[in-house]
Amino acid sequence: MLRTSDNSFPGAPDASALFQQSCASAGINLNVKREPNDGYWSEVWNKQPFCTSYWGGRPTQDQMYTTAYLSTADWNDTRFNNAQFDQLLLAARAELDTAKRTQMYADMGEIQRDEGGLICPMFNDFVDATSDRLDGWVENAKGFALMNSYAPLRMWVKA
Picture 1 (tube, rainbow, N blue to C red):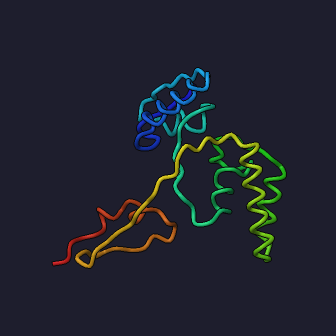
Picture 2: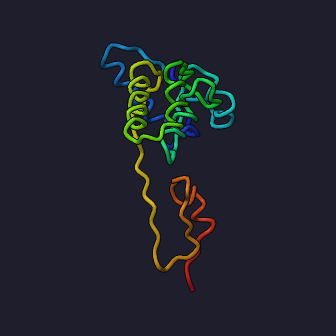
Picture 3: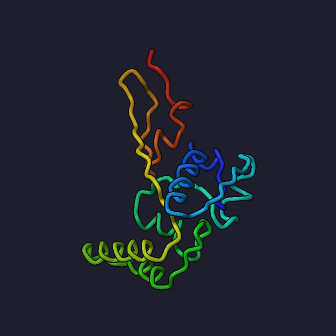
């Protein structure tokens, strides 16, 4: 059973229904349960075995792997546990040779692809924009869109 909620990400229930239809085309019966928004992150995500979630981008591959796929990560929602992946991740942080480090991250990606439990049906595009008629814009160092969604609260139209 795939558990989902509008709170998971905008359009998650619709995306779940599309996934259910794709599974049916392959002869796989998938039940979808729409969970209440209230308590989704505390009662469903990282507690139930199969649910929808959203990951915002991270500035580095290391940060994403550390946050979501390291076996000891608190937010490891797929319960991915691979000793070779963990070892490569820790070693890549200390590797000064760019080509070697790049290959190590590529190897981790292949391990994740071949053995991980993530189903990633889409990547969202995020566009930041401002105008010379606006003030208060601050680039977000973490790469989150629209000043980590604070733009409507912290920007103003110039007089």
